Structure formats: structure tokens, C-alpha cells
Length: 562
Image: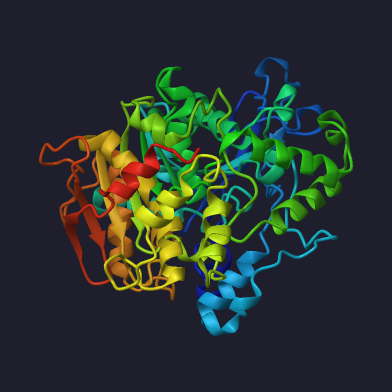
């Protein structure tokens, strides 16, 4: 759900990042199924291996299935050499309401007609596609510092930092927010060991997140999450060839990337052994909880109708253009605040929603985690068309939690947890702010509290409160490389990168010259007791109590609306 960053932040603010050109030497790595050729970046002092395929192209009969690894035993001789020049982006989908959200948030509420409501457009043609768009998009990038790459095979290897991008599970790609060169530089500051940076693509929209009982007869739900899982397993098998240690892997993701990481932590309910990573950094982890099979089945049937086919097998034979158009229609015409496609409970990889799994201890407890959320997570995804209680329920509650009528929880949400009282008793003084509180806590911020309480003294939690602290505002700080308009305090950006890279290297974000970052339960608390959170503000970094340790988050975690 990082569309705000993808469009508003990048187009208005203009994030700068170091180009990966200017090379004068190459390096090769034998992956078994191919020899991958990388180039040396003299500016950043690292080797760049771009667009490495980690799975077979998910085309034809492999569409809508779990990803398939390469068979290293049946490669041609000599092995093909891949120089990584084929830049690839998975097919994208953008909800039309995001343009309305950008307009009123940048120009003011008067820029839209509130009384008219929101009407999704009727999409009939495929919008312009991003350069490099292809279904053959399961590729990853690796930046390996010169000292690490050139000493590979001589020791246990260097730590690895893996980026999973956000974008509402319908848009985005591995380099959308930056190359990762800034994080590599930060990892070598003050004589530190350095990290190998890796970023990956995964299938999006209907290509990666179709589901439902009929679909799952011969299709695989959550294929996009399984893409990520295969990439993480690929890292376990291959990262040593680039100088990395498979036992020192930290997964890092924001928005949908953070929500994906939460799903990776709770994968299979923790019943299939340790995760293929040891640590995680979750920034504004988000996903729309999908209640019951009805929505999943309705979306699949709508897919068949829109694509003008009768079965999934027929859909596998469609042109890529036809599938991309179908995806553009289904995502583009989504209700305000919705992205149409999301991870779902599938009975296997995701046996339940992450909240209840974390509550019930069904996750990999050996991990260490850094968890962050922003103050105003929900406003971009909140419908401003909520002048009455009826429109409030229809445009906010029933979009994000469509099963609340059946579960008899709508009244509890709107009258008990977030009552229509605007005198300042609660955290809102108008309907839009009230709606934003519901969306922000239930779909974004409370996820951080679930993880905090699940990991306790193995968790470090922060709150990003640099104004306006909208969803995605912290990403330019994460990928900071040089002063730019998106970063209001360069020192804070550098400190954040130090915390993140320290954690990847040592398992503890603290380091020389940084304000102390305590674990969530550093004083030995447990259960529902609120812990300590590091507040990252434009003028200070200080420890505060967890504002999310509240009855609302405790209620949301139980998923009683499901």
C-alpha cells in the first residue's frame, strides 16, 4: 500500500539515488542454471548483479501457480551467460481513487465534491505500462561491497539485507524507491562490516493474488507471497557465492512489503521449521484482511467474466495483454481505499490471519525484529466522502471490513471503539479523522503492536512522527543518499540507516553515537502491558510509551469481524 510514496513522494519530492553506471570491470557468478555477470560500481565501491532470475518464468501452465525453481541438473552446456541487462517489472495495477486522494491531500478538501461521492471509472483500455513490464519478472538485484565480494569463500560470509517493496500488492518493483546504495554505504560507515543488499520482484495483482475455492482447485493462492518465499530460499542456497552468510539474513519491507514480511514470519503457522531468514525490519506493515471465502470467490468469478473465459485453464492461454487489461480494470475500478487484491487465508501458507497467529504463538519465535509505524498511516486510504453515519459505514467500514454485518461487529466498531464523538475526547474531531483512525490502526499501526507483544524483548519498536508522517513518508529516509526535499532532517535519515544496518550486522540496532534504542519490553513487562517505543521526530529521538498498547488494537488482533 505504498502508492502514496510511489506517486506523490517520488513525483513531487524527487528522491535522488546513485546510478549504477560508470563501471569498468565485471565479475561472474555460477548459479548452476546460468552464469550471471555483474559490474563494478566505482562510486559506491560495490559489485552490482542486476535482474537475476530466481524462478522459472511464470507463463503458460505456470501462471497462477506457486513459483518453480530452476533445475540445475538439466542446464545446457555451456551455461548461458546473463549480464542482467533485461530490466523487468511485474504487471502493475493502480486504483483510480488514488488520484482523488492525491488531489485533496495536496490541494485541500475543497478540491473535491464531497457530496457527490466517489464513482469508480469504467476502464476499457489498458493504461500506459511501465517500462520493462513483463510476466517474466521474477528477478532480483544484489549489491555486494567490494571487500565482501572479493573475499567470498574465505570466511563465514557477510550479513544480508533483503528488501521487499510495497505498493498495495498491485504495483511497485525492486528499485522503485532507490537502488539500495545508500544502505550499503551506511553499512560500511564507522568501520562497520558492511552488508550485501538484495531487492526482489514478486507477482502482483491478479497474477499473484487470485484466490477462492474454485480458483484453488487448480490454482495456488498467495502466489506473490510464495514468490518471495522462493527468493528467500534461493538466498539460502546461493548468497555465499556473492560473499553472504545465509545464517545472517534480515528481511526488510515497507507497507505491502512489510505486510508480506509479517506473513513470512507467520508462514505455515510456524509448523514447518525456522523461516529462511533470521531477522526482520517491518515498516508500516499493511494488508487488507479478507473475510470469508465470499469475497475471494466473487473476485475470481469477476476475473473470469472480465477476461471472458470460463475456467482458469482458459485464462492461462490468454495473451499477456488481455490479462494486463483485466488486471487494470479490476484494480482500477476498486472501491475507495481498496486495492482489490491482497494476501488471503489459504489454509496452508496462511492458515489464519497474522494477528491471531501471533496471538496464539503460531510463528517463528527465534527471530529478532525491528518494527515501525507512522503517525498518520490511514488518511491517504480513507474516503473523504463520509458526511453522514450511513456514508461513513458504507465508505469506510464495509470497504475494509465487509463481513461486519454478518459478524454483528459494525455497531461495536462505530459506537464503542470509535464513537461519533467529536469534542476532543478521542483522537479525532471530525468524520474524516475518525475514519482515518479506524483505517490507520486496523490495517497499519496495530500490526506493529501485534509484533511488539509477540516478540517482546526480541523486538525494537519505533514511531516515525516527522510531520506530516503520512504512510510512506519514512521511505525517503530509509533510502537516503543525499539531501533532497523529501527528507526534512538529514541527520535523522543517517541515524535511521545506522539503526537498520547495525541491526542487520549485529542483531542490535544500537551503536556508537546513536540515542539508545531499547527493546520493547526492556523493563521485563509482558502480556498486554505497553512497552517502550523510539519516537523519531524532526528535531529529536527519544523513548516514549507505546500509544498502540490500547484496547482497540487488542480487539482488532482477535479478528472478530472475520
